[in-house]
Image 1 (cartoon, rainbow, N blue to C red):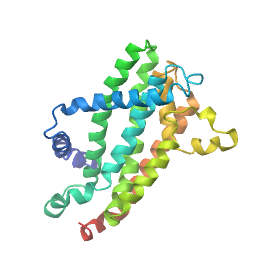
Image 2 (spheres, helix red, strand yellow):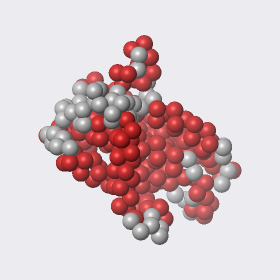
Image 3 (cartoon, rainbow, N blue to C red):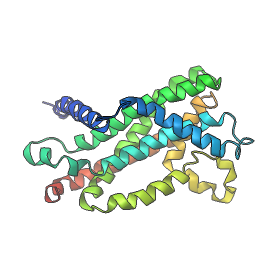
Image 4 (cartoon, helix red, strand yellow):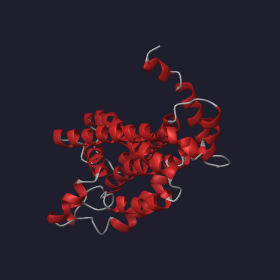
Amino acid sequence: MTKLEEQMKYLTFLKEVVKRDIKRKYYKSVLGVLWTVLNPLLSMLVMTLIFSTLFKRNIDNFPIYLLCGQIIFNFMNGSSRQSMNAILANAGYIRSIYIPKYIFVLSRVVEGFVDLLFSLTALVLVMLITHAKFTLNLLMLPTVLALVFIFTFGFSLILATYGTFFRDFQHLYGIFSMLWMWMSAIFYPKTIVPTSYRFLLDLNPAIHFIEIMRAICHQGVMPTEKSLIIASCYAVLMLLMGISVFKANENKFFLYV
């Protein structure tokens, strides 16, 4: 049996873990999965009321601009945050049976990705309401979503590793995620940042994925080759870093669960 065939055996287990986590997330919720559509819509309405007047001369169709940033950032931030306790929360499985430990991290990212796909419904609705452009460039959407997924999985592997070793890591991450959000130009245009400091935004991987999303859905144009290359490099490098950190430490997890 090849290495790939061996890993494919665990797909069924992955599906069951994802289903379990989704059911647990919406347990006793009246609206259930519908919240993944309503939440970005309600958030968009509030943020639009606050910021659209402020930036009305800088950004056309602010609701779409905002939603593109929110959907991508919320997936990256939410999935990586949930992954921090992926190992600790599944300690029972880890102690009793052999399952590749990365499966538990992957399940959190897949769960977040399912929410992202439902959130796209909100984006489509707002695009229809605001008469946004529906162009063939939307066919690039799976590409950007795949790159975001790869990056987030790699990042989540790192956070899951250190979240297992350091229980206070989640509190520190809260500070980081707030800074990360403000550095991602979700509800403001990059142009308001002085040119001499704009390179700090460009160092943020999230902003490149968001800009590709905005090119496709907000501007209705093809993302530039440069933006796709930068996003691809960030995704692959983060995945390699995540795998390296996780594999180097996964045998120590038994000491902490």
